[in-house]
Length: 494
Image 1 (cartoon, rainbow, N blue to C red):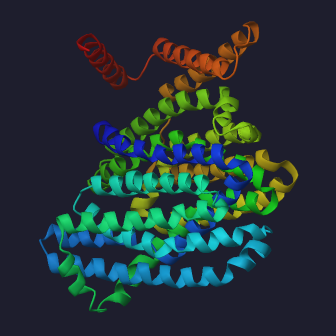
Image 2: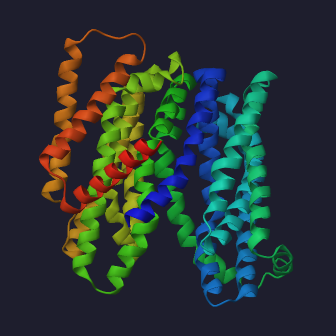
Image 3: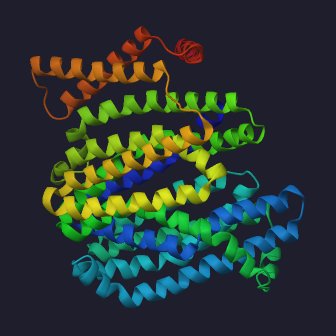
């Protein structure tokens, strides 16, 4: 499980290119234009989940079944059906957005300048649909590199190149928005090329001539799409409502803060793809002991790593936001709160995997309830408390959602993830933070971000030392010793 998680994490590191892109955009275009760009992207990205109906995940499941028995015609037929559904819905929604961009900008967000970028970004929808289906098919063959190359390398590079061109030519917000459809087009072309390397484009073209089985495929994918839409709304609700109630410059600061927590999200995301099948296998074998062991292990690993990143983010939030530019400092408090919410989702959210295995509709109901709580809190807190209110609403919703999941898992499976080693990690992090804050007040301030860099490094050293003194779990201690020995050997060799 640890080896698989590290492999997934390695691929996900490429996603940090999106943070680099936003830093460049923020520095070149300023907080106000960045805010308008981010709200437009959030709206179009959420709309895509409505149009796509989960075809990327459904084709992954259905194509894998045909691949397992060597049924290539059936596999290509599944991909063709997914393309009909996904791109058909995307084209229809694109046309709708092109017509309604003006009313949406004025009535929903109260920001008329959003109309232009909404129309431009809507053109990306069909390209996203094509790329999602074709890359889903390659993942059904257990090939992850094409997904990483297309979505995490090709698209971010093209998006950055277009953004730089827009700045150089003074093309403004619409020019910046053009980075989205052009990058989506590049991603779709790359996905088509990658698909042709491992499967057959002529067979796919032949399969596209038939619409047989579309109804059954739609019935299969619709619940998946509904779940994806709700989860996307949960992820985007704060930015969308901040975009509704606050000025564009503050929206830019909040969007930058939300993007800056990406490194914390990567830790949990690195574990999910490998943990889910392992838990499903233990559940199928009715091995209650192994289920509980994996539950404890993975939450402990995520907690230890998350606390290390969280401490640095909280202590250096001002300097982190300063990377985007001086106008983005207003997002420092929101960054610290959002990072805490992300840690809650990362550690406690492992319980969601149990619900996905056995009770997906219960998980969907919990997601819908979470969205309702979050939206209500956002409507109340954003107008009165600004960015901090938006982040607090997200934190409260995350806490309620994950506590409910934990309670359901404890009631249905009679297991919970917590051990004394979890408590030791929390105590070590809190103790390290308090010590570093106390010492920070007695030391002279360094210029610029150097003070926060020193404080962050100091926190990490104290936290790791406190963990060692408190005592790691036996397996963790052996793994840490092996890893440290490997690092020392590589250092000496280098």
